Amino acid sequence: MPKKLNLTPFAIVIGIAIVLQLALIGADCRQTPVKVARHFADAYYAIDADMQDYLCRDLAQDGELVRDYLYAKQQEATRRGFRTSFLRHKITTAHIQLIDQSEDRVKVHLKGTTRVCIHPAFMLIGELFNLGHDYPMDETIELIKDDGQWRVCGNPFGLNPQA
Image (cartoon, rainbow, N blue to C red):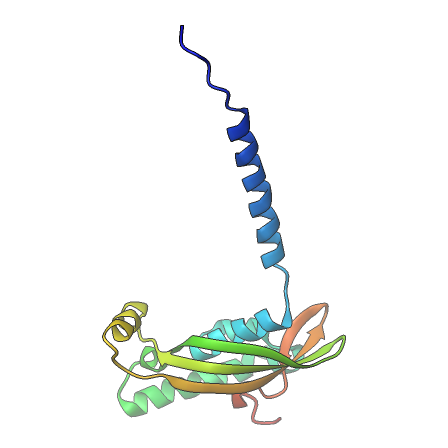
C-alpha cells in the first residue's frame, strides 16, 4: 500500500509566498517623490504625453505645456528629416537624491545617462555591440504635494518657459 504524501508544508509555503508577494506589491505602489520624479523623467525623455499625469495643477492646465513640448519635438524631428520616434531617449543610469524636503515640497536631483531609443531592440543591439553613446542627464526637479499626490512643478527640464 503506497504511503500518502503530506502536502501541508507545501501549502503553507505557497500561502506565505502569496501573502509576501501581495505585501511587496502594496509597498511598491506607494507614491514617493523619487518615484514620481523618475516616472516623469522617463516620460519626458520618451516624448510621451503621459508626462502630463505627473505635473502639478499649475503646469497641467489644459495640457498646453505638454502639447507644446510634443509639437516642438515633432517639428525638430521633421526639420532634421526624422520621425519623432528617432528623438526618444531612455534613461540607462540614474542616481536620484532628495536634496531639500519639507512636508509638502521636495527637490530631487537626477543625475545619470540616457541613450537614444528609437526601438528597444535597437537599443539592446547598440549596447551589445557598443554602438551609439550615452547622453548626460543632470536635473533638479521640484515636487509639491497637490491634493495628497506628489506632482512635478516649477521648470522641469526647461519645459516651462514662464518659470
